Length: 630
Image 1 (cartoon, helix red, strand yellow):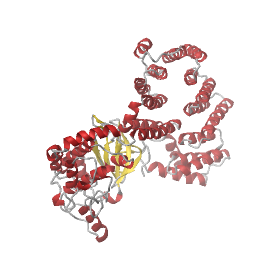
Image 2: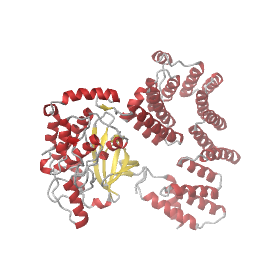
Image 3: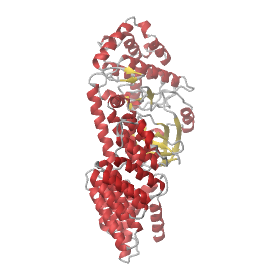
Image 4: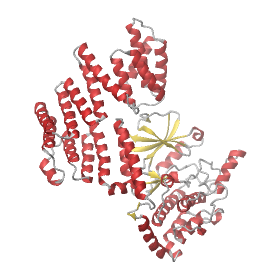
């Protein structure tokens, strides 16, 4: 089983599982060389024997089309077969159907035409490539309002003797569905795939979009679309009707032919232009508009967008409070890339500024100051009168090594006026960046004395902590961070306080001083872990602080509680093993305790079951210790 952080073939890092396709498990990944997000799909074991890895890799990698994800690799590694391709931001069409969106004709025609183009491209490859599982869940809608067809099964190559891969009953052509039933119940497995199956599936998807009805697996569409009173032109309805004909011979001969019909709907439907004008009026009345290919939905869009934004913002806030930085970046970026929410945020720039600011704060905490500055600046562009955004933009620039021109920035954003306390804070940041710690501390104290704002006071305390660490004054640093956390209620500042105390304990000159710092760290982590949504890192750090204090039994108890939630994580049994070994050593016992051996076996199995991003020094040391003692 792949774990978050595993690396395949030394190049593709697993970030997290994001779904399951017709033939495999799908992961969000990261291309370590190209430094970009990707999708990694592990083919299900029952399909691996059907795949010609080398031949299909060549086919996949030569595909280049605007409405297909770029495929980077198709490889065997660790007993699995993986496809590596572009990550497409946005939501799939099923998401919008589930939320009861309705689509204006311009959008339907645009997407249908784009999908005809990509099917024509696939069907005219040598050998032909059939998708075989076209459904709303396999049609991504990009932030630009275009389609991207994903999860196609290249083993359906249009040649006699092809094998049937995954399909979705409601969208599969009736003859394709019947072939699947024959395979399932009679053991047959060879048939002649046909591009008209993809054409039917495409028509079935748009039948569902336009009518709200699902086709039946065995009998096709339940009601003739031409008989339904729906707000679409007769020409468009006729195109979808022909694509979904039960008899394959009556469907379009090719995706190109269907695309050509879509290009000439006006000629086929004299009423189209008049109807189009009526639809524009209806769209205005219902809140529908399409601009630059971006879909806006009618029928309660404002309410839905607000609810959707609040749900996603709540998730973003939750992962930010939990200190899950990679999740913050992913959740925030997804919100910015969701073209449905873009409409809401463009109408409510303060909300957009909030999202950008949370992302910026995450990068700042990770000490990626240049990237943080870029997001702070974007937040400032969205809300140009925010002195908070301007202040933190300047601070990030300073930390990144730049010297911000305060006067020029004030002229650029005249509505975002820094007060004297904020100006002193920026001066303190500049002194800190230049290495003048005493001047930085004096400026920070001045800012603190002038501040009447809790957020600014917390930011000043955070800066004072960094300055004190630079001066090796760890006790003052811990105190400043504790004050910052109390003022702001920010759990990330509390985490920083705990980490600072723990690091200070590691550097302490005496046992008494070390224990004092460790106890301070434990107090912080106990406070963090008392929350219902305590994060993995907080729980693990608490166990490690207990271990550092020599409370091995309590540390092991806390780790065992964690193991119930994360049974496949090797670090938990690894530290349990260390606890058992060290506890035995205190008793003068050099034998390996039974519990330690059991934990070691679990840890090593989990560690070696996946390729790590890099070797874990603690685990490698444990392996060395155990092998020497065996």
